[in-house]
Image (cartoon, rainbow, N blue to C red; front, side, top):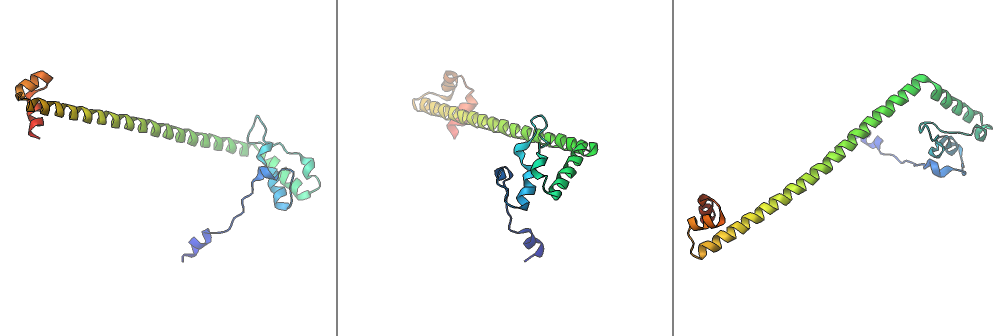
Length: 160
């Protein structure tokens, strides 16, 4: 076995941060509660509204909060966040366009298949009519005039 591939497989723990509310049981959950998405500001979805008093008794948590606040206040980091938002919006727009185009292509393909089926049905009806008229004793020329089709087409149908 390849050690690199083996190292890719590992056990994981998935923490649903919004479900932690009001039940912070250990250190990890306390740290993760800082990122609870239910606390976002309505006018800026990248910012969280945190109650510093909730973490006031813990120096490390206060340090974490201050680091996050200073990062949020840093214009370079805010510019990078804006650039990331624009990039992700462009990706989302592109994906939406691709999905819309795929749906449109599927509709067009279905329409083409319907038209192909209708054409095949018309060909079958024409063939049946030509064969029926031929069996009734009409000549290819008479059938062509009756159905308003070229005599070559009638000959082609009769020869197949």
